[in-house]
Length: 355
Ligand code: COI
Image 1 (cartoon, rainbow, N blue to C red):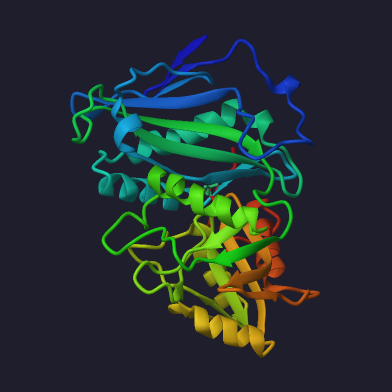
Image 2 (image 1 turned 60 degrees about the vertical axis):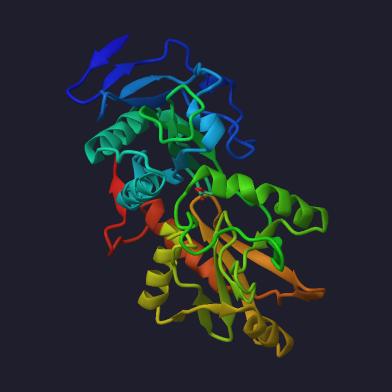
């Protein structure tokens, strides 16, 4: 069935897959809901967004995204409250960031009304794919790819903006161990570290595999010039708790401006927890660890929410963090989720929707 609205063209699925899904066993990002959105940029403008049944697409082998990685993406989540209403968390931040990422990758910016209306339509059509209950969410993946055919190394003249969604629980279901990078780098000054450029993630896979073979789930990247300062983990921004203060690196052209990071800083301020936003020297963290003053490390991200770190390694120095009864990481996670699931007052206006 095709429905035309002023903004979107909607083709509903005739064969929902929802009955085939085991919602109690969902590996992250593998099962996709019934509908997706795509919108093409051709002849210098974004065309009408199309909502269609989820499915494969066909591209010419010379399509530019395959050759030059001209692609950016976002990560968002929707949550269902006890009254069956579905809420987004700070979606304007993701909208602004995908356009910032696009600009850096020479991709045309996307219109806000198309973005917001598509989210609303997808969440309305696939309402049953958002499950109630603590830990359940619908992960939303907007992305843009260069679609022009041809292998000339120049920006594409055509693009496809898409939104796909998948039911999800936390990205890391158990606490993780991390390795502080000594050799490899994620981002450099003047580069694309602040953008959610697809290539930022692909470039991390090889060093992360090495870390994984040593028992470390993630690498905390250090600055490319000196490797003396801790930056981010690729899937997460990082927080270090020394005594009762939390410290996190400032965002820069190398570090992603995480929505969860920003929300945790605000929640810390609201709850009189001291926050220092400053370059985080590896030396300072190791010294605090040796003195027993390093009480926690946790990562923040949309997919990860808040991931508690059990321990780290740097240059042969291995440290296990203390097991706290009431870690700040857990405190912030609860505060965030209470807002996301519409269980708490939302004094900053972060919740959006109610679809
Ligand atoms: C997210 O947290 O949504 C991200 O984009 C990280 C991703 C690589 C899982």
